[in-house]
Amino acid sequence: MLPDHKGTSRLPRAVLAKIHIAKKELALSDEDYRDLLERVTGHRSAAEIDPDQVAILQRELRRLGWPGYLKPYTPDVPLKYEELGDRPGFPTPSQLRKLNVLFNTIPGYSTINPEKAFRAFLKKRFRIEDVRFLDEMQYESALNAVRQIRLRMRLGND
Image (tube, rainbow, N blue to C red; front, side):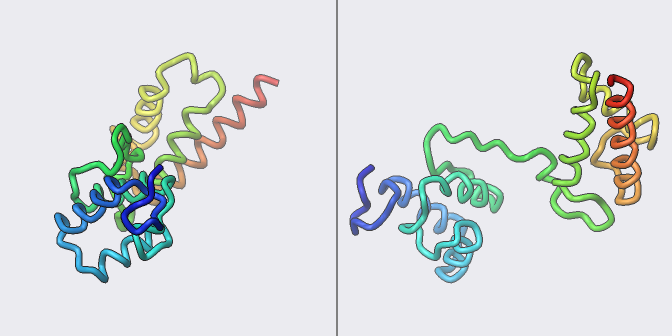
């Protein structure tokens, strides 16, 4: 990889240029831009960013509304439930992902459609159509129920 025009960057010039284009298109002040870089990458200058951190920075820029890509062929796959953000009174996206993963790893459920089974579980137990509608109390109850099912299934298979 060639260094940038100053010879100090770990990123190609094209990627640095796109970072600065994103800054301009998002109308970030210099201070806001540097705060963003520091929050996401730990560096206050784009020239100091590791190539491994480009995808993380790209995800954050896209979350802020920038439609571009920093690297070609970098899939911008958002994490499941991330679009929900933090909602008071509701579980966080990471908690919803945890519940979903725990349910999908119940022994014996791999042979059926786990997403359909998960929805059926939610509908039967909580009368909701989707995990996104669980409130915090229902989430705790669902998490405990899934843990109990997993434990029963494991003990029944031994």
